[in-house]
Amino acid sequence: MKREAAARIALGAQGFCDQLPSGRVDVRHFRRVLARLALLQLDSVQAVCRSHYLPVYSRLGVYDRDRLDDWLWNSGEMFETWAHEASILPVAMEPALRWSKRRASEGETWQGLHAMATGHADYVNAVLAEVRERGPVRALDLSDPRPRSGDWWNGRSDGKRAVDWLFRIGMVGSRRVGNFERTYEPLEGVVPATVLAEPTPSDEAAQRELLEVAGRCQGIGTAGDLADHFRIGVTEARPRLAELVEEGRLASVHVEGWKEAAFLHPGATRPRKIAARALLSPFDPVVWCRPRAERLFGFRYRIEIYVPANKREFGYYVLPFLLGQDLVGRVDLKADRGEGVLRARGVFAEDGVDHVHVAAELSAELDRLASFLGLDGVEVGGRGNLAAALRSVRR
Image 1 (cartoon, one colour):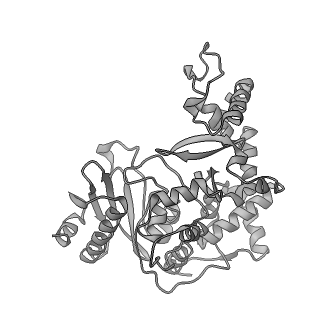
Image 2 (tube, rainbow, N blue to C red; image 1 turned 60 degrees about the horizontal axis):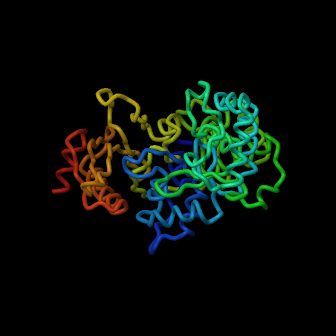
Image 3 (cartoon, rainbow, N blue to C red; image 1 turned 135 degrees about the horizontal axis):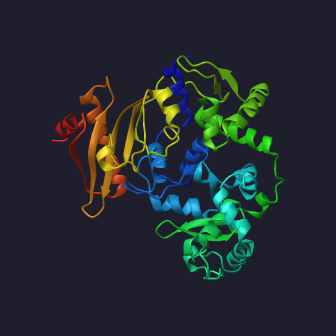
């Protein structure tokens, strides 16, 4: 299989062949996107907006963010947990994630929090009891039963690490309120009792389920690509993938130029053309696995948030630009809410693309994104090899 065909399969699986809504975006459309992605990764950086809004925007266009949040946090259909980092996903998937929570509780992962929890079990149990009694409760509102003497936790006295630990191992649930602030409550408050009563699958069965979901959502990918979707170790994933191939739930295929074998989901479509136009979150599944983005699109991408400003190549918060079946450029964006402007501080085209065509399409996409964010306009800075062309088409 050629790389270009694999890219079209991947984008089709991610929803970029689905028809855009013709009217108001509603819960049915949100469900469709989550069926394509399996989860939304959460992140606190909002240089443009909260990261979970953007993958939905990229596939649906302009919608009401409050409506999405109400569905995510209040419908009873979704819950927050650790999956691909902090994520929100359907409650029906909770049983398949219990193996990861159990391993964390046994200290196989999150060793620092595990050491705290085992070394100060009485304190953690007191926090758990308080959440069960008072929840939903914010971490800063906990009465903090820890004695304030001593130097453990470097003098912290708010119980945040304890409640984060309890959340990580599935002892408490969480939802977001107000300005994306977490509240904590008993897990049965966010996951229905019928789901919690389901039998816990074996680690192997759970991982097969998650890898098959990853295959459906990605369409095609290597062992590392599919394992990354739910943060399964690739060594552990390989025998599960072999079992899925043997059962006919995935197929082993070869993609030209890929050093590793690929796995194709049998339900994946093979589009002849992708007509997408979208700016993508740094945490969008199309690009969150950087080696996969490079293999599929020839697009090398890194987040430079934590790189010193004078050493950044492209900028602080850079969104890849998808046009058709290719990632053709990237934009360093900032939503200046005080001035009501979306600032394209740096605009860069990939080698070999038509600058005039890409600039015209990007201009239209920036206007749409500004509308989605409730901003009045777009300002284009001078950095980047596409900046001049973009300013020219916007005159």
